Length: 481
Ligand code: SF4
Image (cartoon, rainbow, N blue to C red; front, side):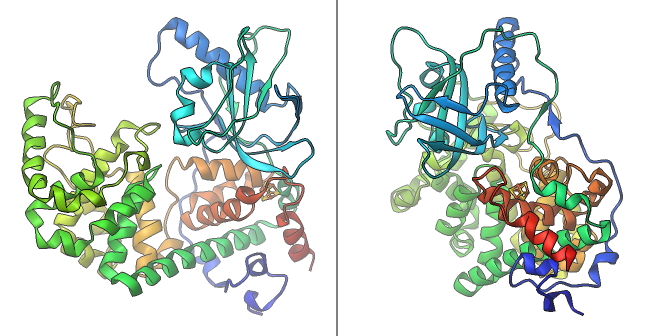
């Protein structure tokens, strides 16, 4: 029986999905051990001894909080009863310390959001959280110290964030370990423990198919509205924006469509930087001669168009400039987009020919006269060339953009999973903590994609600490049928 015909098939976990029952065995991946699901605390940028000790103290506080050492019921500074429904997951990029957490205030409904944890209540202001849009979703500010004066934690949108103080007698600094778990196993990990490996693979592949079809459907819908080429260009731009700038890049591609860039190919790069709002202002002090001549050339092309395009400029607040590896800086990704636009026809030919091997080689070798050796406008020239698109980004572009664009599901089945996908490691910890025998499945892109889909469909919507999540019961029902 076709799995899609059964109410108890994995397809039933995700309505509307048609399972390709034959595809499961055809994956060709190379097994490799999955990375640990713990991460060493960040020490970037490099800090001196005193700052490092302070950072360690803060990390220890956070680690003990996440381990539940301080309990889960608190009284806010305003006297409210605060219950931590779920502690969420460690955030390792810019923004609050814990995301996907949930709290209840005075027994009300669960509020999903982020939790920020600081040694001192004043750190909220000192660290600029009140003017940082990434802190808009914080539902609780936890701190361990405050002075005589009262400090409020408020967001950029002038919302007061509930505060809770931690009281503890022992000092920090003694129990800090090098490895901190980034997430905790979920309730479903017990249900999945008893699932045969082949069934588990089937569930993951079913979820992956749903994910793939959604992406392909989105691309097709954009293609109906704007044309196929523009749909590919928008998706590619959005993929270059990862992490943190997908929306800004998509807006840029929508505001400066390919057909506009093709009208003035020599000015295309300047228009991209200008509309992105990324061109350095009149104060060019500190730029090297090489950077100056590059910026001048961009300005010369941008200047005559500026008045007509200014209204389309992406607001500064839409860009996230922190919390990413220097090589992934949005300026460099913008440079990469300019190169891809320049060679658009060749790129599109390779995609339509589904020549993935060649496409990877070509994209891995694209060069830019400035951005192949600089991290930002002001950075010194790097001694070695810096790849504009690293291996990981190429994998992600293939999985999220090029394969869905040509409906290349079969090619996805043969792909290895991208390296160092932190979200998939968190998902593996949540769902497959008791199935380490199954972690080798995640070496294949399709199973990794399935796991991510389950995480997004269930974990990312849960605010009950797994209690009301329907996934464990759905799996048990299907498996027992
Ligand atoms: S929220 Fe659901 S899918 Fe996620 S870990 Fe908990 S039980 Fe599993």
